[in-house]
Image (cartoon, rainbow, N blue to C red):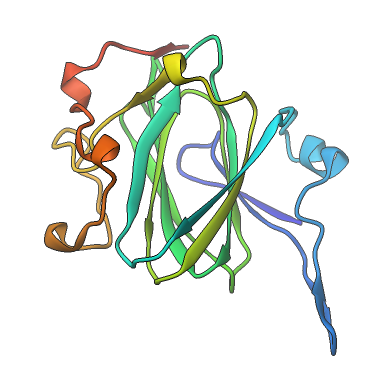
Length: 185
């Protein structure tokens, strides 16, 4: 397993090994011991699976606040996504900054996003499937979000605005400036 710290060091890009032969491949995508060696001691309580039919689908930007702050381990098992994490931890030297990575079935990379970050992704191919583990259960009352094209964040989404596919819920999210601080260091 290869672990790379991104520009926000708490966010990690993890590439598990794949062992291939004539049958296909085998990969250990999660191991408590190996993740602990990489500095991730999170306990995962739920696995989520999303399918996006269209290229240009944006899911996000989402987070959960206390008492169910979620860390996420995200991987793409079919197609490809541009995955982004935005630091919302007031007092952090990287507050308001983002890091991103292309996750795909081909490159087999995963992104570890700890609690205190907004998370979102954009599909780069049609028929894309994403699996992610979370450290807290879904909690509607703790759910928060910021509009994908927030002018303060100015994220470099890899899709033209007129091609974006959003849920009604995500299209109605507020700008960051209208949100109270949710996380503090």
